[in-house]
Amino acid sequence: MKIYLDSANLEDVSRALESGRIDGVTTNPSIIAREGRPFKACIEDILRMGPHLTVLAEVVSKSAAAMEAEARDLASLSAAIVIKLPCTAEGIAAARKLSGSGIRTTVTLVFSLNQAIAAACAGADFVAPFVGRLDDIDSDGIGLVRSIKETLVAHSMKTQVIAASVRSPFSVSRLFIAGADIVTLPYKLLGQMIQHPLTDQGMAAFERDWVKVPD
Ligand code: E4P
Image (cartoon, rainbow, N blue to C red):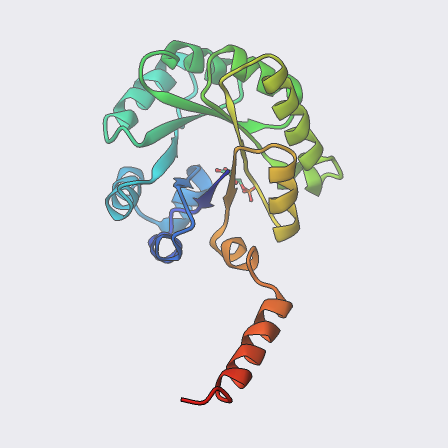
């Protein structure tokens, strides 16, 4: 199991790195736009801050050929980069082209099992189902992750599942039960994941009792 941070905010990245709990960072065009800085500068800063991190960067071109060229350019920044391609006909064609070329790919914006199957058959290293956006329209995001994982395992596919668009601590644990290999989280959820009132009460009791221990 791995946890990634779903943010390009350098303060979030720094705090998440200090927590020692992330193995990667995911971005998308909206996440990058929030930072108000050039795309490559954001990615390069994240790579510098966490040399052990896997960093997901998304292409914005429309045609498969342009996506492939953009992917090759982004991947030249570092071997830690994984290219995100949208789950469109062009994006999946680009994933097929890049598969086996040493450039790792994630097919993103996945909302159905058939989309995930198409991405896996094209040789994508990862698929990213958007759990929260499905839940938002009264669909079963966690159920989709379970179906994708079961199908990939049943057919011995190498493609791993990155659960994205995650909105609650409850979803995080359920996504891992459902078989997600990686769950990517906004910084706030990283903290919420390990909060428990009984841990706080237990710590307070230990502190109260510790002062009674004679020197
Ligand atoms: C991951 O990289 C996705 O792009 C991201 O989790 C989407 O989250 P949202 O649905 O909250 O925008």
